[in-house]
Image (tube, rainbow, N blue to C red; front, side, top):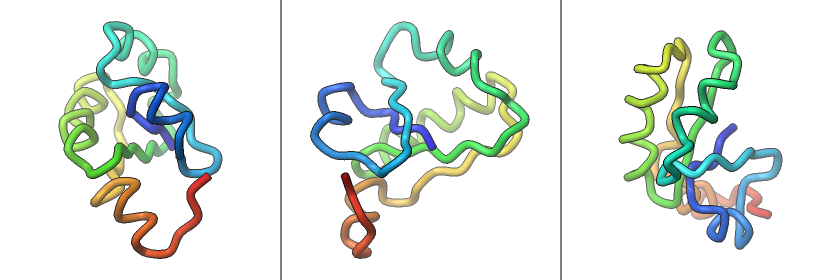
Amino acid sequence: MIDIRTPQEFERNRISGARNINVRSPEFRKKIEQLDKTKPVLIYCMTGNRSRAAMEIFREAGFTIVFELNGGLRAWGNAGKTID
């Protein structure tokens, strides 16, 4: 599970167990290239806007199973799910 928000946003709140890789960082592509492309990846941001765009970057990088948390962290919280 990858939280693609900024480190500052990630520090405020996140889904337990998520890893932070900032989609706005110039190092984003380089960092995701280091991940195992054969394993499923779930990405999220606050509302889903950034994660929709990031899905294409993951696919271009060769990831075969990529999911986006529809509605982002906000929808997760609104559904009563735990946010750290």
